[in-house]
Length: 101
Image: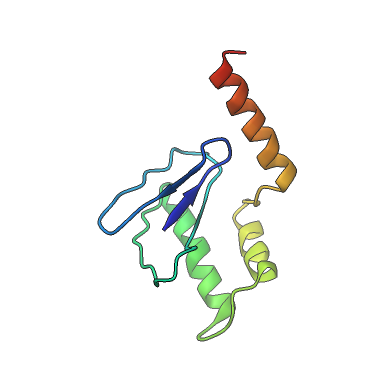
């Protein structure tokens, strides 16, 4: 799995590896590789696990997860994906911190 976070680059996690995401850190996971990936996700605070349960209810068995369906589920949990502009802003802040500005 690949872990993405603005201003922090990417991290590829292999079999048996662990990635811990600090609270409120903007992030996403993807699988840009040819091999199918499976990962275990633990969530705190615990209420956010309902997002995944709700998403499963919305798409049903065999349905395709679309951006629109995901956005609807995220709204219910007061979570919004970052826009490209927001990602650039985060990256600028991290670059300034790295340069000591």
